[in-house]
Image 1 (cartoon, rainbow, N blue to C red):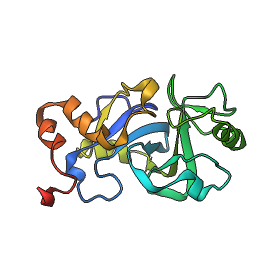
Image 2: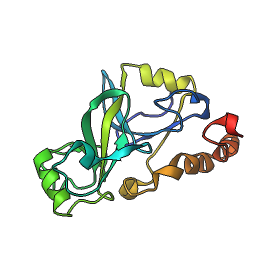
Image 3: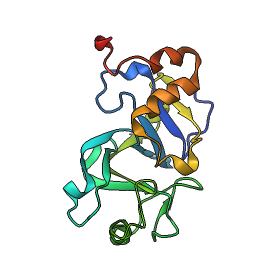
Length: 186
């Protein structure tokens, strides 16, 4: 049974057992919002093969674009650390926010006032209804941790994030930190 509190700002680390799950294999999800009806989060370590200005020509700067999850993949979402600049931002935790006035974001990005260290863009989000996430955690699909990155989660290099979390978890997870993405390539 879940003994921890699932709340906005927590990180979900995909257990190695979710290999084969195209959506969440080696994923790290930041929980952005939760209500009694469910949870909403974004996969923070799955860059896409195209950039933000490939889908939004109004963006003049080359910004990476990430796969946020399997829900509403045709919609753009974003998390940031710039609530002081972006009206209508929604608080995730003391350092991290999501959403906000999109026209303002376009202006701030084009003016160079928001960089990839300040904001991350996603196509889609990850969502769980009701007790679905708790059931997945109890089935050992996820490890829930506090976001120890707080201020720099947006700037962290995504390619090693899951591996580094396996090392940080230690114990039985250490062996997974050095396994190839596809175990058949071992």
